Structure formats: structure tokens, C-alpha cells
Length: 276
Image (cartoon, rainbow, N blue to C red):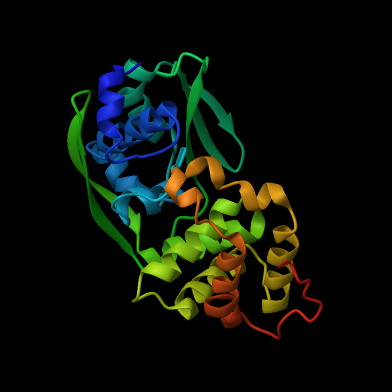
């Protein structure tokens, strides 16, 4: 899809293991710039999730992220938004597969630069239910400079604390170690972050789902997941070899147990299992 030389050129921004990941990252970057030059997209969709963290809040990124997650921050029909997305992407990515669940997913498939891999996909998911933000919306500049595509756009996203609050929700609700990695990385590296702010936002999002999560429930959830090698190793193919060499999911767990989870209501979980 993209000349190999241009993929290699992008490695200075995306030093991932496989060329196909570097290529995918370049495609994701182009998608974001193209979409946010459209007023329909910029006025209605807010960027969130792991890709938002890596693209807008870290330079260079520390892990590969495969999908694009949007929130339809302005309520209304989703049809015109889908039409706007496809107007920009279909001409060079083809016709997407569309899935409807609690939101909308568009899945674009393409042939990667790595001939060993027959096809790869880009998933664009739109949350059509959460028409709100806790801390407000901000704009972050995204610059793409590559012989294949260059452009600049102002990307609408949430503030970092809110992105991490929803990342904390993802860690609780699904079983992907990348969520643990992301939270621990930002708590370790960003000095102004306060665990109580992130935990508070997590609690607000859970309450909007009609749920309350105590400290004991979150600790039990995380500690039991730590016993699963699949959870701990989920992050491995997404980072560069030099980061793989220093990964320690148990240390990441301890950071959350010390700096984040204690701000949830209630007492600690008493039956903690020693994992290391």
C-alpha cells in the first residue's frame, strides 16, 4: 500500500518490531489528520483511548496502538458522521466493513508492506452513548511529515486525567495488559498527575453506567488478572525491543496499587495473592 522506503522513513517516529506496525501507525496518523480537517468530524467527534495517549501526549510514542476510538461528544444522527469519514477514507482504503453494537465500528482492510502478512485492518470505533466530558475538551496539534503523506490538524481530545480515568475503566472491564502499562507509564513519567483525580473520574464514569467499584473490588480484579500470562504479555508485541527488555508488569501493578487504587472508596482487598 505504501512504498517501503516511506515506511522505513516513518521508523524514526514508530520504532516497532515489524514494518507492518510502522506502516499501520503511519496510516493511523494520516486518518486522524484527514478526518480532523473536516468540520463535521471536528465538531462532533472527540479522540480517546490508547492511540490518543500515544499520538497526542507522548513524543515519541512508547507503544504501538492499533485502533482509533472516538466519542460522539455532540448528540445527533450518526449517519452524516459516517458519511464524512467514508468520504475521506474510502478513496484510498476501500469500502469498510460496518458493525453496529453499542456504538459503530468501521473496519478497513488493506495489504501491508510485509509480504508474509496477507492483510491487516484498521478499526475505527465511535462511542455513540457518552455525550459528555468531565474536564472539558482540548485541541492538540498532530503533525505528519512523510513522503507518502504530510499534513497538520488540530485534534479534539479529552484532558489527560480524563483519558486515564477511562483507561482505568478499560483496565477494570477488559483483560488487556496494555491498559496496565499505559496507566503505570503516565503515573511514573508525568509529575503533575494526581492519582486521586484519575480515580475520581473513573468513579464518575462507572456511576454513569449505574455501577460503583470499591477499592477491594478493583484490587481483586487486577490481582487475579496478574495471574494470567496472556494478560501480562499482551503488551510485548506492541513495544520496541529496548522497552521489552525492561518491562515489568508486576512493578506496573505496584505503581497502581500505591498511587491510584487507594483513592477508590472502601478498604483494601484482604485476600491478596502474592504474585511475585
